[in-house]
Structure formats: C-alpha cells, structure tokens
Amino acid sequence: MFGLGWPEIVALVVIALLVFGPEKLPQAASQAGRTLRNLRRMANNAREDLRSGLGPEFADFDPADLNPKNFVRKHLTAELEDDWNRTPATATPVPAAQTAVVDELGYGEIPPYDSEAT
Image (cartoon, rainbow, N blue to C red; front, side):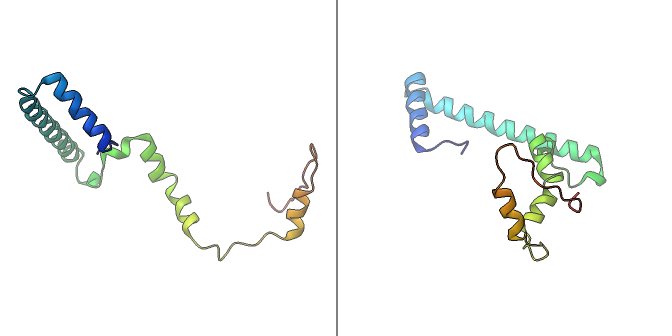
C-alpha cells in the first residue's frame, strides 16, 4: 500500500497517536477515511465525465495513458517487447570469424565495414 511496509505503518500510527492524542485519534481517522472516499468518488466521476464527453470512439481511453512513461511503453515499445519475447527462429547466427575480428581490434582501430549490413 503506497510502498509502505509494516514498520513504516506502525511508525505513522505512533506519530499520529502522539500528535492527535488517544481521544482525538478516532475522529481524525474517520475524517481521513471520509476525505479519501470523497477523493476517490470525485476521481471516478471525473474519469466517467471525460469518457462520456469524448464519445464512443474513445471507449477504451484510460487516463493513465496520458502519463508520458505509459504512453511510450504502450505505443512505442510494445512492438519491441513482442520482438524480444519471440523465439529467434528466423535470426541468422553470427559467424565466429566475424566475432573474432571484433575481439582482436586494438585501441583506436576501426572495425571492418560491411556494405551488406547497411
């Protein structure tokens, strides 16, 4: 939950107990629960309003896709991940002679040029 483990949760409860005191802690917890419930309801309503306003062509729209990291992962790297997950049945093995040449290059030497690879 939010990246918190049990030690952090216990520390937060002890701090809350010290700050609010034992008599006001239940009221503060219930108010925090109501606030969290209201925020979730507002977020769900905003998401539904956005979907209904966009129309049926955006029925599969997810607001999380607006995050640039998720957008790039979904649209640009999905094909790459598919390629990575495939078995390399069609891949041509690299001859041992070519790999030996690369390993034998000294510092500052230019590797051989392969016109067929470009």
